Image 1 (tube, one colour):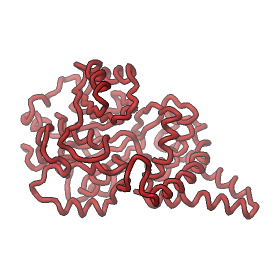
Image 2 (spheres, rainbow, N blue to C red; image 1 turned 135 degrees about the vertical axis):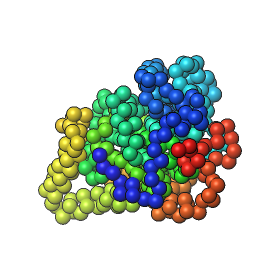
Image 3 (tube, one colour; image 1 turned 180 degrees about the horizontal axis):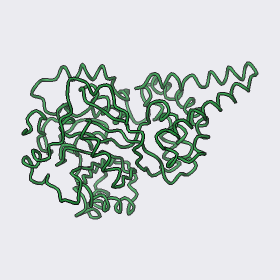
Image 4 (tube, one colour; image 1 turned 180 degrees about the vertical axis):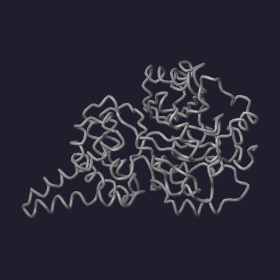
Length: 376
């Protein structure tokens, strides 16, 4: 498990004091065969929920953990979900008192406030945990404030195979961005949640925990399955994902360098340079595939997709920068992909001592309890 250096910061992990939480909310007590864990699933208005498959997954999840679905779907679809999931999960709309333009973040803020347990998993609609994965996350949250697992796509159609090349490169060079995180509720509330106006909400949450001084872990061995998106959906996301790299300038600059480097090699009539660069890219991806036993979930041929993904990201990076210059990506304004850790530290330092949640004005969600007011 990789621990972030910030675990030695000014705030220590608050700890999973389940007895204290149970005294605050009698519903927090869990049956002996269940994990004391909350699972928050935020649904965006445009999410393709998968119908009966998702319902089956929620039925299985509900045997193990408390499940909260924060559903931002249109009214007709919300009503269908309510009928299908009655008795399985707590199905609620986003808190109308929350302000922000990122629907997923608003769902997370609502769900964590409603959670009855200290340990909370947040996952996209296409993430599929098994019991072993939930147990692993629960155990890690006894030691850190935030856990960032590793997603792998299964089944693996061609478009997901292509995207997996990028996943392996990220694994080799520091860690991939998953569709799921796990966080301590007391830490989340004490730091005031996170900004629901950004585009890359998971990155914003990770950075906010670090800015607060919390400990984070990126266990390279903790694999959580994810369903593949449709080819059309993934195609729509490619430039958006490159746009999100504006929050990580180093990655963005590396992507922007791909096309000029390839053009220079072709202009110099040295195609061998491109071949060697492709081989090196495959080698780096293979390091990611072999890291922490990942070969059992990433087939050997996925490393071959890395050069294709890198070339595509080089194209999309220039398109993303062009859209930024023109005022932002489609469907959004020029708000940031995510704030820097330094900016978040300044923002947290400027908070009033009596602030409970930065992004809640008043509202339907119950008032959160500050970590320093939990019974000891």
